[in-house]
Length: 285
Image 1 (cartoon, one colour):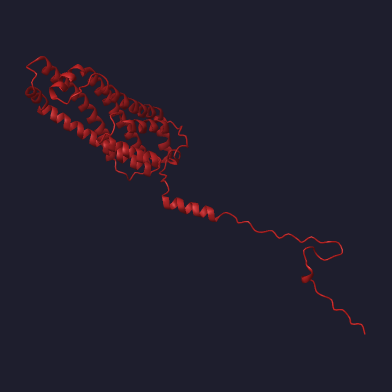
Image 2: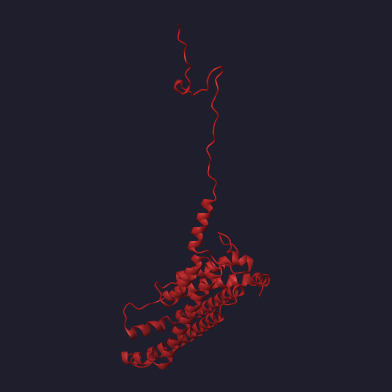
């Protein structure tokens, strides 16, 4: 796709992609907030966990649906960025976009299915049997739950890899600044290794991408968004060379010779007697 067609396509889908990225960031934070609300166990004991999970299963189900929509919106945002990257550098492989879509879809589906299965299991545990530890362990170690857990982790892994690769390549072609590129890589890592219960970094990055796509970036849009071509950011060595060249091109001030003031009928001011030629006096005979 030539630069003119690229810019025309991005202008057509801009509003939709801004809404999708903003929605992804908002829903990601909202899902975590819903999961933190409601009753929680104060002790780490399996039977108590299942009884509490039965009390809060509506919240968990709502949170899983909200998180699923957020995962699909994240996949859409990463996919759009990857299309813009490949329009500026066709040598980049298209599998990165496929990873983003597959990761988002797998994470969304497995999240909802897992929440429904867990809700059914905990309801069965609370309403039937003696509610012993052996019954709780039997319900939670079922093969179906283990398969769903593995699929959920696989979806999160694929989505994290897509996060990292999309942010890295978008930074390389100049669509994202270096700060936004490295922050996107860090957000991808946090998708797997959560430091806080609320994904603040991922939500901030998605909101920042939405603001960037809207064309209102405070420091101006990166050049690649306006030219339709790859505009690589200069390296540290190139920046140092440019600064050095700019410093060497500055003109140096030359001293200005000022004429010596003349006094009327006398020698120039500033001349001492030692510097004037002495006249020889004639001897009187």
